[in-house]
Image (cartoon, rainbow over all chains, first blue to last red; front, side, top):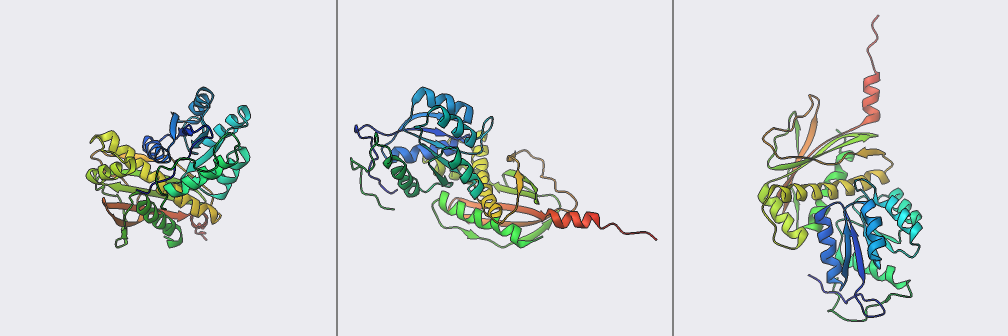
Length: 150
Length: 167
């Protein structure tokens, strides 16, 4: 498994993630990856409605959000979260990656999109990019957990 | 059966298995079959309706599913029915999601129904006119079987509308 330089906040604390996916497997897989990047899990949710509540409760730095979920789909959840929290940084993680879906998610306020199966090196670069435009968060790794070999 | 409708599913499955199972894959021989499908293990059946219609069955043996689960989660997995079902479901979702992306970007519009998991002793019945492409993809965890029956609805509508005129 490749090693990655830790992505940390400017206060040297781990970046906190909310992982939203109706598949337990998908959540475990994403959690494994963000922990590899030095991240911390603020919360998990299996549908859009729970994600909205979990966002308000945990105030994560980044949300990793599936699109197709029961009760409320990811794109609607993005819209609601961003309406309440314009500072939210949400990355869509879905196997359904056609243009209309991606555009809809971006229009509702998502910052980026990554297609499943997720490649760790791809997710890492996207997270670096998403974190880099937030003055409160570190734009580049400040603590090396190892050499990044993609 | 049109290969241009089948090919995206095969390509997506091959790519998804290679990436998510972190190893080489090999597509086995393609066969055409008609009638009911006989499962090898636990199967996910996904129905598609819209511009194109049909169904895809993704089927793997329990032992293979457990190996896949261990790779997907990066941890030892408990050998139970729920784990196997979730594994098959997750694989099916990834394959279908990637296939849908390819077909949607080609201009096809359709609805994908959630996977139905079949693990009991009953076979998966096919309709009388079900002609399916059957193949196995060899992975590092073992064979994963695909059974794909897909039709272009426009053509089928035309066929239905072509009613013989009696004189």
